[in-house]
Length: 115
Length: 113
Image (cartoon, rainbow over all chains, first blue to last red; front, side, top):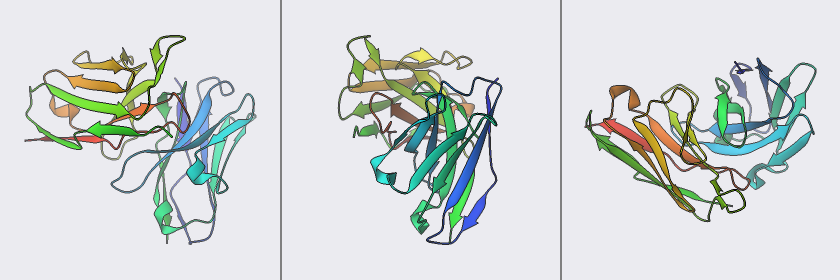
């Protein structure tokens, strides 16, 4: 059973950066894309981008280009999402998810608050 | 980018009622080479991550009750729930995974009348 365990909630100042981790267990880490999706309070789901650890290839939504970096450590089977130049609109729950384009496994979510 | 539009935004429903949620994509998500629609549906309850219900538009994820069904092709899709149960009250999202960014619809919130 694949499980995704994310790092805990974080509070950041405007202009700073945040790095959220996503530990994958119970499955094969490499071949599936690990994607990051965020959800602002009371809002819908927003696809940010992802990484395929086996190839190290990344794909980002244009909206976040230049501000987001997704990485993966195959040894620890952990993916990371770093978002820089934070502003109040980045306050959201950030989810990691994996699957074949559709996502059948999700992390529990990490609340990032930008003050 | 492909824009996904769901209707309605919210839907007051009664228990036992049949529910239909629509999802329209701004361009086709049908891959004619394999005849698959790159469209999925999710259910999200408060405080929880989304849960996959359907992929390839109509393939039910393991464990999803068969009162749920997905249909459609090209640009128009439907999620139906036969005989709504209390545990089905949630927000439902469609998502296309044909072209990055893999966009979601804005969500449809089911509420009890």
